Image (cartoon, rainbow, N blue to C red; front, side):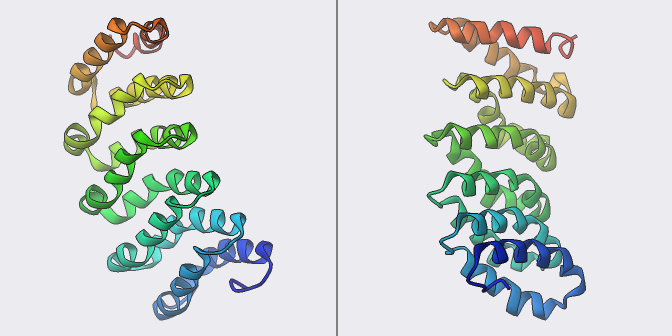
Length: 220
């Protein structure tokens, strides 16, 4: 079914096979299923690639750590290079779950660079989707990696020219306070407010007021 000529059959086939993976032998998964997924990355049908992107994280628990990095990670990287934004967005939505599957060390090496590269993405929907996933990813990695690698990125998105991204960053700051505690993020919060207040563009000063309104209870 995964090699069917109709995209609807292949799309549903991907989702159905993922559901029955616990009943399949490791050899069947590795030698048949994973090799077929490699072919689907190049499928011309957008819906097939979206189905694949949404299923990779669900496949991860059923393969070895080595296969996650050698087989599944390249699939995600290939889909992130796809020209169709809906395919890229589906991969980004699943980065947090995949990061939990491969562990902090592999996430640092393979997932964090993907996240950091999105700050230069010209598509605001890609930037927004990554930002929406930041609390989940940072919580799974822990405070030390957040502080050293992702913290600056997570707060600098407050300076994005797109309103929804600034609003989502405020939501994220509230979550970071819940996850790590105010004392551990207070210097980044203070720096964030300083830059907003000093910005010559009044929209960013308005964002500072919105952030105060949203965060004041968390800052008590």
